[in-house]
Amino acid sequence: MNRASVIGSVFNRDRGASAASSETHPAPAAPELPKRRDLPGRLRRPIGINVKVHTLDSLRYRNFRFIWAMTMGTGAFDWTLAVVMGWMTFDLTRSALLTSLALAMSSVPFLVIGPLAGVLVDDWDRRKVLASAIGAKAVVTAAFAAIVMAGHLQTWHIFVFLFLIGTAVVLVHPAMLSLLSNIVPKENLVNAYALNSVGFNVIRLAVPALAGVSIILLGPAQTLFLGVAALLGSVLATLAIRLEPGETGRRVEHPRPLAQIVEAVRYVKDERVVLSLILLSIVPGVLLLPFVHGLMPVYAGEVFNVGPAGLGILVSAPGIGSILGMTMVASVGVLPRGRVIVAALVWTVLCAAAFSLSRSMAVSLVLLMLLSGGMATFYTVNGATIQQMAPDSLRGRVASLGAMAHGLYPAGALAAGALAELLSAPTATLAAAGVMACAVAMSFGAMRRVWRHK
Image 1 (cartoon, rainbow, N blue to C red):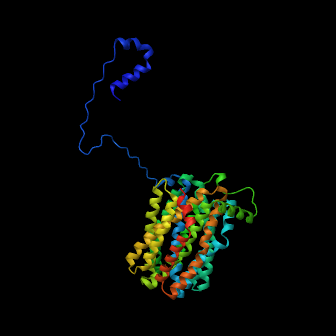
Image 2 (tube, rainbow, N blue to C red):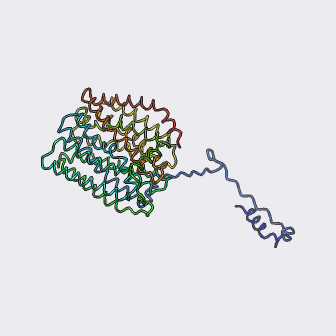
Image 3 (spheres, rainbow, N blue to C red):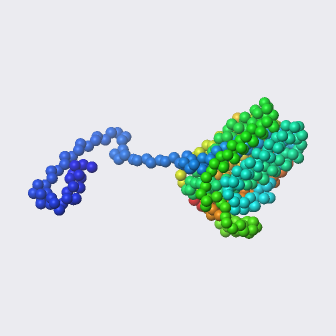
């Protein structure tokens, strides 16, 4: 502000007292300040750039930090389990079909008891449901590891064990998603989902490779006991969460479970965008994940010939792509969610096709990173959008209905294992990418509704 502006401001404020004086003795004009000489390439007016990076926004909330720690612990267990069970099953059976079916057993409970799990999550304290489910995973795993250590392992033990693990995961999935919706505001929900996925995939960078080395040095049973220790840490982190009475998910009245499931089904049917998002999530669960991640032990044993340590690297490498993708999603404040979901789905089809054609371990690792980044982006933005739209009283059941898509994984695993055994793992993956491309093209109506959603 120059001197003339200051004098004018004082003059207007006190004009009643100094009007006459101002007329007889006008204020002298302020000397003009020397102009700054414009330099070549310099803008005449400075442009203010206000860029806010939102990457760590959700970590401001205490409860989210405990959810994040819980995710790290369960992630360490999940990736350890994937390597141990994948290698142990293939080594025991030498069958791509049985390996795919065994790894798919943990998805069957999503289809069988998934909706009932959503009812429990909406009716009871979500924090206690989550802690109990994680504790159950630890107990079942310890019992199975004891069987392996005693030398009594049979193929049917693997199938039963993974089915029981899947039964616990059916409760973990909707309880965790509903808790996230309770502890962060809606505008931060995509950020919270993305950060949670980053935590899960940060663990993926190291744990699978370490699990592969641990199988060689310690043995599969001892490696599973290390995973149990990680689960116990997750239980403690979950119990440290503190919620307000209205945020626990418990309701005073408990209608019949069937009536509650019907209520959630009607909501999904009437909310066309939510219905489209759930239907789209079925496509990669049936046509992509079983033909890539489900066949990873076969790729390690027959295509790349890299052994259990190499399998750990193959399982770890996609975590880099997921972290990069989720960091980008978490850093953006507002994004066109519908377009991101559709673009990520198309991107994964292209990456899966390229992966099936590669015979170089290094190139395949890069392609797995790119594929995993697209897949993580799809599932994160898809799930956050569904939870953001659903009312709190229905979040657990809606999440369970969406998770039922995982229950169709065994159908894809059966096809993947049969094709890999009949032809080869790369041929099976390429065929699945082609079918998925056709499925995406045929679901034009659902794709259009999602594309328009903001």
